[in-house]
Amino acid sequence: MNELQLYLLAIGVVAIFAVLGFNRWQEHKYRRQAEQRFPSSHDDILLAENSQPERLEPVLEDAPPEEEIHASDEPEFEQDLTPPWTASETIEPVVAAPQELPLEPLDEPFVRQAQPVPEVVAQHAADLAPDPATEYIATLNASDPISAHALVLILQQLKSAGKPVRWLGQRNHHNNWEEIALASPSSEFVKLAACIQLADRNGPLRLDEVNAFCDTVQAVAANLYAVMDCPDKQAALAAAAQLDQFCADVDVLIGVNIISRDGTPFAGTKLRGLAESAGMRLLPDGLFHYVNDQGADLFALGNLEPTPFSAEGMKHLATHGVTFIFDVPKAAGGVQAFNQMLLAARQFTGPLSALMVDDNRKELSDAGIDKIRQQLAAIYATMEQHRIHPGGPQASRLFA
Image 1: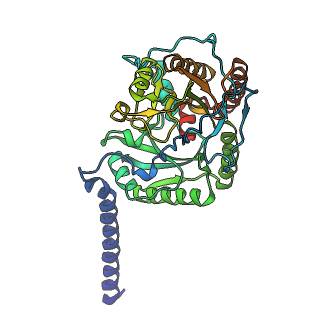
Image 2: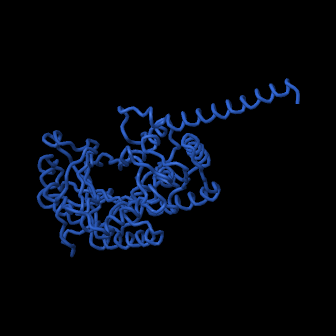
Image 3: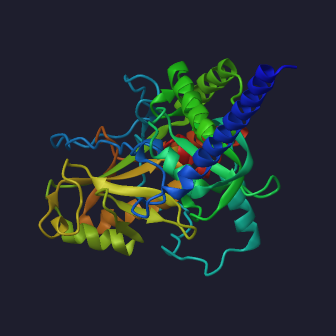
């Protein structure tokens, strides 16, 4: 081997080591970049695009002109003319009872347990886990632990995929799942799950949404040097269509109206006193809400006229009617919660000299209410068959 060949060989060796060294330095730089550049001014939450859309509250129309109260017919479910599941369907109870039904008394409102029992903690952990029945789930596995800081920094730069998305993490492969948005900044995870809802009140998951979701997860995986796994998309779309049909069948809203017998308007101060004595409290959405011992929302009270309730406005409000609102799939307790709403409604009729009627101004009767209870029992049986419990975490996500 002559002197020229030795020189060329030496130069080649030096070049190879230089390239390897540069690659190693670049890999180290990008691996640490997300954690080192995380600014303290960022909130430790996910972007609003990844959160669930704001709930569309039932729109209460103006009270129709006063008309004669007729004897009631049997109640029926009215078919909404809007596309399926774009808004809640309404059961209009056509019949109500002047006399009391054998209902159990209302729970004392806003009672909280001082310390959660182990069974409750275990159930909460199970509720957080990825749910294949209602979500399309992409998983990410990392060779090195991923910090919550780094992940949130990356997620803040991403756009929404359309449907609500949850990001969950495991500290090791045997731990419970945790919400990344609620984890401490120092938390580290070895496995992530990105979960997009298969359906919501806007319809089923679409192909463009699942494609955008997988692109988003792939971008996160690339930034974190993680391996991504996205399941079959066509199977997910078929499951989304079936779930959407089920949701359309059970997404029902019941409204019970309280109107004056002689057309005299109700004073807001008196309405507030009656609502609070029934265990309800006024929230920023303009409705009074009744909450059970576990903090679950059972039903609400709104103004039959367009003006929403407010703490200051109640002092000067005068309205010709109010509406008790029962969101069937989201009401924990099922039929018993409906009974509690009826009992609360009856607490308004005496002091206000009012009638309890449906949207057609037909007075409610025992027979009609019993038929509604039967229909509710059928809806709740369908939900239980799909293992989606009324008022549970799955129902709360699906019917948000």
